[in-house]
Image (cartoon, rainbow, N blue to C red; front, side, top):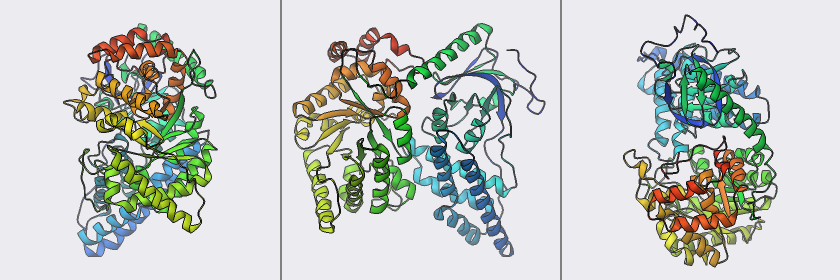
Length: 610
């Protein structure tokens, strides 16, 4: 492809920009390869006037605010209504979540109050109000909840543009081979562009759990985010390759590189077709051992996509979003309805509901405990014992929902038998209350716990006698065992899933569980890596739970292993003294399938997970 002359308003690649053949590094959030010409969307910070207004102008500013809010809501609704295709419903729900933000009483009243009391213009008041809402998510280590700040940013910018009478920056049409480059893209932008057959995109900000990234993955649009200054370094018309698996942007590639990536793109197309055929196939090894694959979800709306991806149920329903979305504790009825929807959509398949893991870095607005951001402080089951009403209401909602289908309860951050017994006592109190009220529920609902503290690992034999199942949460288990805060850039490289201590912890936990006759799943990020499948099979995991998009490639990998080989590999890994030795063993043992183009390039060093 020859480079086209860029439109004069963009002026091509800026002086000092990347040279032909240069790579720009970012974070790959949607695998695949896009090859096309750059289309620059000039976005970024919205510059707005900030001024104090006179008392006579207050009513006019309040009217401007109301009109901008309503127009923003209408625009988002129109985009949602115009969606089509198999993912239309899920994406429309995401957009309507932004509509709810626009109309959120907390945000709206904060903006009104700022206009009335501080006598400032509507634009300034919107910024003040949105900053206040984002403070609830500020500093959270959990990436999913940190990314919700971006949702508020998108809503804020849409309202500000409408206040100032600016049209959206998204064009009505795109060139046939467009690769969009922008500072950032909102989910609404993403869906509008997708209808124009967008090939791929690169942005300067964003993360793997942003709604924009989720949409890109759902639509199979290759994407790389967090590419520093990409919208300044690349000009409209530059030939680009977006490698969403490696997280790279190649600018003005050579003919040889271009030919190679066209071949890789073809491999991706064939691989997607192949994986799609596995939806209803069992996750069974070559020697006949079946591994149950389930999905991790944060919202009940994700169940449909989980089933499309081949999930056999929900292995982890993170319920914190219910609390943070409402910005108050959900009622029993709200709990029950959310879990009932999951149960109905699963149509007889089991869902594991994790009781809330609030506290620490996920602060519930209005909580009487205050803002304790210590990840080793008052959180999860500890917070439940401090504020039992929250846990009792949630257990009540879960039990009521069992009338709609099989559910299990999972307790996070349990470190002792005493805590397990105390939580079971709370569950029994709720059961007694429901019996008195004549409410139908599953009296034998399984009660399990997450293994994410070293104390739980070494008490696993005793804990297993008093619960129905274990699920290993590797995200926390790794950082607590190794003493590594993976949000701290100075030590994040020490976060090592393949560290011998982690493999020994998993082995000890699985052995204790099986000796007691209960099953063990893994619901942490370690379960999503094809390169780790062999050792996890060998260690005896009964179930792997992961984001829906990871299920096809993990199933594909399992079907190329022999359990007998995996057991041998795991035994060898357990004798290793260093992470490097474990990596060498696994690298030598990987079947050819792990070069599957849809599998991300897993770190065989066992380094930090995304």
